Amino acid sequence: MIDFWKRKPLVWALGGMGLLLLALLGWEWVQFEAAVWQADVGGVPIVERLTLDPVGNTLAIVALVSMVCVVLLTVYRLNKEVTIPVSGWWMIPLLALLGLVIMLYLSSIPETTICYPSGACQVIQQSEYGEILNVPVGIWGALGYFAILVTWSASLIGSSRLLQIVPWALLALTLLGVLFSLYFTFLEPFVIGATCPWCLTSAILMTILFWLSAETVQSLRLENAIYG
Image 1 (spheres, one colour):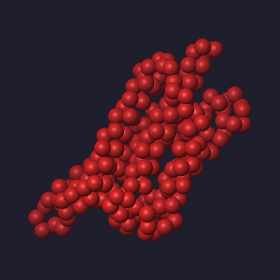
Image 2 (cartoon, one colour):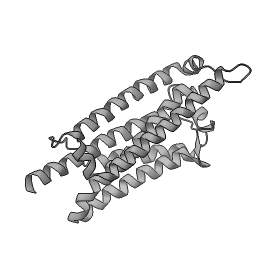
Image 3 (cartoon, rainbow, N blue to C red):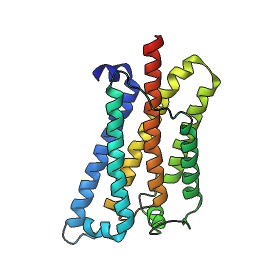
Image 4 (tube, rainbow, N blue to C red):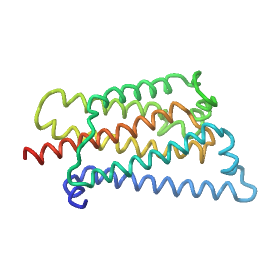
């Protein structure tokens, strides 16, 4: 386990930064909840927020728990010296392209017209969490999926050096993506009180991409173990 992380400091560094970011955001949420419950301070208690969009928020919580389980299982598999990988190399660009389309759709239409089951997409887009550094979240998501597509495409060049680097680069990119997805999926039911199905779909896609990227790393490790 320790040997794995020592040999891949980039993933370790990104994972550590991601966990630190989640911890800081978690602390911000604790402060937010404390302010809501203070006397004479406006805000909707968490129980009421969850019931604002019962169907969407329930789906978000189920997805959040499932995503955490997949991430933990993926890390467990990566900790093993060599495991038989699941082939899914050609699914990566297809899923990334689908995620890119979803993010571009969300960012190009201020008030998303197609939003099931609750129509809460507008609530998400117009909330204070709809932008990061004055840039819509959809744009950041689109850039992430685009980076995954470009990185995957680099493997088609055929360079043996790139073939050694690309799986780890994909793992790093999807790790950042899944950490962001976990954070935003948490915000929807517990802070905003509404869930955007498109955002939830994107979060699930990113989690699958993280799992598939980890499997490509396993393929690389298995190949190196066999052929040296």
